[in-house]
Image (tube, rainbow, N blue to C red; front, side):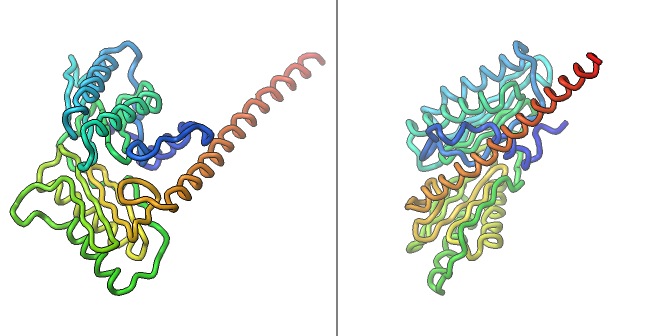
Length: 294
């Protein structure tokens, strides 16, 4: 039984339920990257709801002490057992991690109301839960791919960017485990991370795949982000990126404005469709009354 909607529907669902642009948006580690909900719903008051509440409470309690934890809350049946994890960015302090996870769980509670599963990636953390086990399962599905504007790299800039991507993609020569990787060369910076439930081989495979997509899809871009199901890789040139840990600058504010414009258009379309539906229903009712009065 599939545990989630197609990723294209993930993004549509979350975009359509975000708060209006006039409301203050979170910044920094709590900035939204992507998210989604399972298509399967539980009955309020059921065992699975109780187990999910217990699971999310455990995640919140652990976030002040560790940057990654997973939990399983067993139920009487397979469908009642729930699995969950959170993962914070490897350079965060525990206090910032706890704040990010708290924000993510609160957002999931409203965005994935009564859903058996949900996932939310913020700039500083990732939270996922489901009643179908996903722990320890590698997932290289492309969830988000964003490339900045094309820019003219000189030979030195290309060499520095390629060196950073090669470092992110490389396995630890000593056979160690590198779930969080940060590299830089001059004005090019990069970061990659895999979710902590993967073993060293799976983590390396996932990160190498994400970096490979950056190389092919964002080859001449000023910045690039690739988020796969269980890992991500990002780079920026000259500190220029839309938002997040890879740098700042005016480009971030411009991106937020574009996001607000997009959300305003989407919300306007939804409101317009709702108005048309109500109007047509009223018109149909009015016509029926006219016919009945004749």
